[in-house]
Amino acid sequence: MSEAKTVCVAFTGASGMPYGLRLVECLLDAGCRVWLLYSQVAQIVARQEMDWQLPARAAEVEADLSARFAAAPGQLRVFGREEWFAPPASGSNPPDAMVVCPCTMATLAAIAAGLSQNLIERAADVVIKEGRKLVLVPRETPYSAIHLENMLKLARLGVCILPPNPGF
Image (cartoon, rainbow, N blue to C red; front, side, top):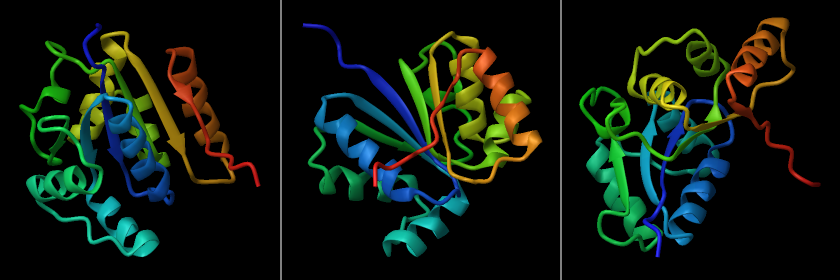
């Protein structure tokens, strides 16, 4: 039997928190290990879209989601924005894949520019440099020429740009 995949999931401040939360649930149900990162603005979006008070402390988020999704011990790990020594920040032990869902255009632009100003950007940078799969789920439309250029730059690096398009 193969070892469980590790997927790093990041919530940013874009609209679409239900997509990200459902992704975490499905990954846990599939037996994956999940490393969850979230931005400060994601806390606001969670409250507005889902009436979910996303705690500021990573340990509280981990306990809440582990209980909500019946995660096995250690299956879900949550890291704070400034945890620069967390596993997602290091190329020594990168995740198998990373999904930023939902993804703001600011985060997408920072990743395209190779910035690492917070743990989400650093983790994405690590995934790209280590040749792992990165999926970005941008929610802001319409796209400007700048947005499209940033998406093209990332697509040429092998990043999957996956705008959510519900089938209704």
